[in-house]
Length: 107
Image (cartoon, rainbow, N blue to C red; front, side, top):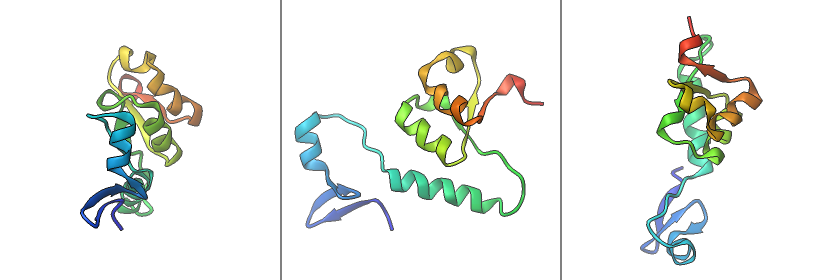
């Protein structure tokens, strides 16, 4: 099931009418789906089967703490390529779960 769907010509994210959201918070705005993030994390983990793996998200791509926290909870690591990326709030979600792995420390 896709989390973004049109219902009666109106776009919804999960059960949220995006027209109402836009009226409330203004535009442009970014809208993410918790269900979609979880589904994609599960698909990535399943793709590796029983093989040991570490799937990482590039923190530099999006430092939104709520998104990073969801990814960390789903077992996704942090791909941090610079000291600036690791000093931001975004990496805190990964430190809490032990998934904080700066690139320069990997061997």
